[in-house]
Image 1: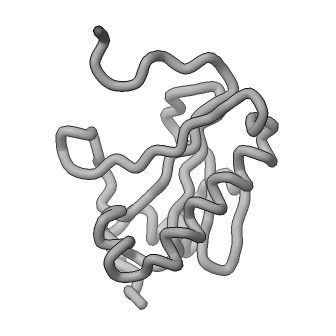
Image 2 (image 1 turned 135 degrees about the vertical axis):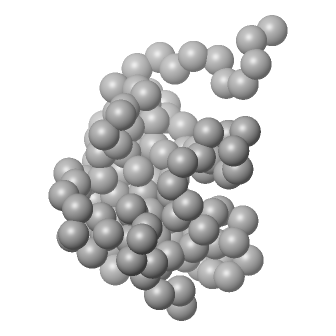
Image 3 (image 1 turned 60 degrees about the horizontal axis):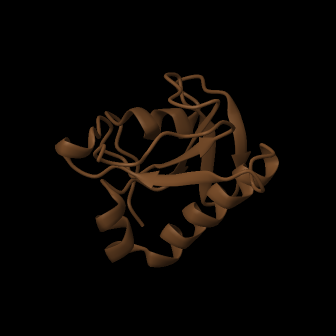
Length: 120
């Protein structure tokens, strides 16, 4: 189990030190609305434990990674976007635009999303 990082934004959100708009939570995950939404529905799902990114999360706690993904699916159901479609996205590394070094899953949907990746 990874202990919280007092300098980590998402650890502080999970601890309740920084306000967030909770959407869904379990004993192992916490989901909240992104403050800079990139789609009509944009929710972040974070493990309550601190893991730097999805790769370290998968290596250190694969069952927790599964919990994060299952929570993302539950968020999609709760938000009413399960049947219309949604994306589950992990950004890893600078080229992906990751800015917070705590593994987190983006749940995006609620509208027609653009093409993924480079335009052809």
